[in-house]
Image 1 (cartoon, rainbow, N blue to C red):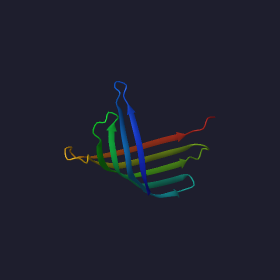
Image 2 (image 1 turned 90 degrees about the vertical axis):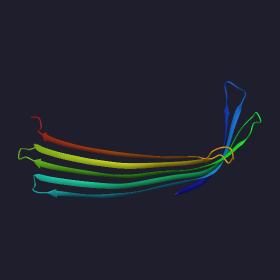
Image 3 (image 1 turned 90 degrees about the horizontal axis):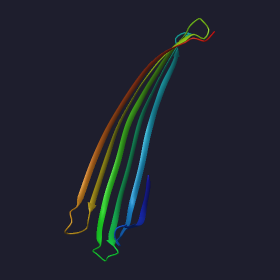
Image 4 (image 1 turned 30 degrees about the vertical axis):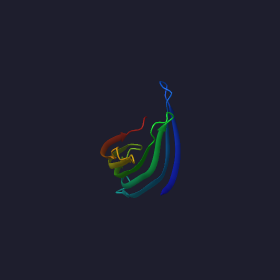
Amino acid sequence: MRVGNSTSNYQTFSDTSETIYYRDEEGDRQHKRGGHTFKAGIDYDFTENDLFSFNAQYMLRDRSRSNDANYTRYTNLNTDTLFYDTNGENKDDETSYDFTSTYIHKFDKKGHELQISGTYSAEDETETDYTKLDPLSDTLIIEETLFETTESHKLGTFQADYVQPFG
């Protein structure tokens, strides 16, 4: 886990006016990432000419980021200064798995063989994003947003090859 704090000062200049916009930020950040992978496989020779292989992999990954920051916004025109606090958290969770199998048959003729292989992969991912913006004012409204995105991918392949040497 990484934990830290930050201080930033931004200035934005306008091409159409004399106004300079300032934003000062001070806050704390946190970032955590984890993951686990499990693999297993087997190779089996039925005969000297018949080989079979199977492999599987399962992965879990997660990541989270959070921040708590105080902002000050103002301009060079001596207008009101706006103070606000923001809190945010972003999380990703992902699960995936892969299966691969191969069968090889070597024929009696030298160099001739049949290869049959197949794969199947799947992945599920969920991302959650939360933000709260508090303008620290009696006249402005606290804004909260929450987004959740879910994705799922699946892919399978099948292939058969007959190998025959030239000549």
